[in-house]
Image (cartoon, rainbow, N blue to C red):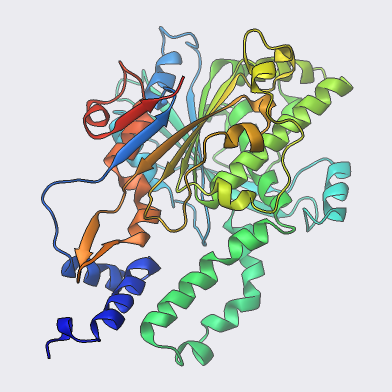
Length: 445
């Protein structure tokens, strides 16, 4: 009896599905693509639900000679997600964006900031006691790689900051490193060994982050924000490991520059947690009237800033499970509208949360409407946009619909529509023609 008519069909399908879902076996992905018929027409869906928002192109325009911030710069921060990453992991994303924005000149050698764990002594002690931080002040705490992209005439630019925090969690994985050794791996089937290596590299990170490493990782993000918010590209040394302290600098760069943030998977939770921590800290300092001469200036400057966070393969809802909510929620109207009774107490003017998710990405979740009100700090003035988009094509194999989950999880940074939605945003007049043609926009007002 032919294979496709026998009971072997089901096991074969399951094996192929496992190959497809693993995302870690190039052989499996290649085999799957070879077996599945490729359609000529691109039928992948793209659905945007939320209010309009500016992309990086519009932010660059604000910092041009004729814009409202003529002496400023466009700064972008990338924060990675699960798995071990090395500096340079975001090169494809950065160069795709630069090409889209016609920024085709880059510095030959990037600048490197070797981060050190640096928080106030009392905060460090408190967080260690609460099980939210570990190690000692001054420990190595991640790496920031900084690239400067410019147009040929030098009139437009983007400074791209890439945070690599893997070194914080890698030592924790030593406890299961034996499982990757030859003493165990040779006992597994080849495919299962590939799957296990993937799990051992990626699964521990959310568990470690929700333990006593989260304070260290958030401190790495905070230090990166300090470098972004206090210096322009020319002021950053070629290599340095010195700490950055917000209160030592006036907020001149913040007033002049525009900012966007990009995260992937767990990075979305890390970045959001850090922003909410900064929000709570700023609100606390406003009440305390801190002695630093620049604190009140920082508070006033940040209240005028709009933050835009592009979350690729978003995981906010999953990583909210079992956690408490911020101190201030469900008060958007009070803090964030012109008529709001607490508008003077907000921390940011607006935080655009652009959450990208592929329905076939098994490690991503779209954000339910109302999440930003119930689970995000109202003083951030969060505004949600959901982008539900097929990154991987859906194909049929042996009568079963399948999509390459590895591609669905990792290839956001190489999808033309994603790059254009980041580069030019979503609006009636400024959205890219490709987005207008291939994406459905359900505007929320």
